[in-house]
Amino acid sequence: MTGRVLIIRSQPGAAESERRLRDIGLTPLCEPIFSLEPIPARLPEFDALAFTSLNGVRMFCALSAVRDKPTFCVGKRTADEARAMGFLNVVSADGGASDLFDRIQAELPKDSRILHAGNEESRGDLCGQLSAAGRTCFFRALYKAAPLSRPGPILQRHIDGSDPLDAIMIHSPRAAAILAEFLKRPGPVAPVRIAAISAAAAAPLKDQAQEIACASSPNETSLIDALTNLLTRGPEIS
Image (cartoon, rainbow, N blue to C red):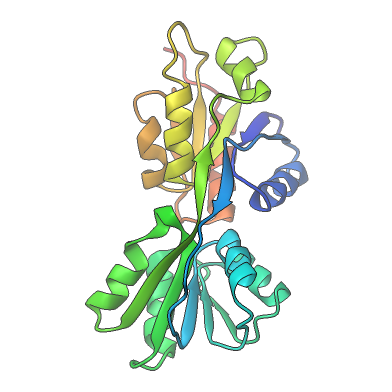
């Protein structure tokens, strides 16, 4: 399989996506469309941690030396990052936020105070579910994704039609929303084919993408499966 695929997520995740695409013969191009900016935060007292991203782990470690609390992570990559940063009791849900909720419910004492630390866009889902289930849960936004003011050169050349891409990978609704704004420029825009990690991540691009393939589960393996299916079937002809 061949194809030029743009990865617009931030590091360190972009490097991992790049490696995995190279392993299956694709040509990945990395060009994040936002930068990550820390948010000053005071952390409450807690008995356990929940992380839904690698960067959530990293930003927490910049604020706190606590590494011995039960630490629940949404997937393997986040769990591996937590272990690498010195966390001693790490559990991976190997799925999405609902899977993380299920692991916490099954394995954490009911009276535990849980801190979910992450991107400001993450607020709501996990803590909302846990609170509805009678848990004590706090969310703290430790960083935000600040959009770039204009497309980078790789994306700009695709939009202009001078150096087209075969697909763009979308890892979050935030990234999709930023890309959608870039595609609203006056004049013609080259067709965009999207592989998205979830339907929510694809939604901001539903009126602008030529084709969208969504992962069957919100993880990198399923996203790459969706991408390969998209590339295998070729672009739609209208």
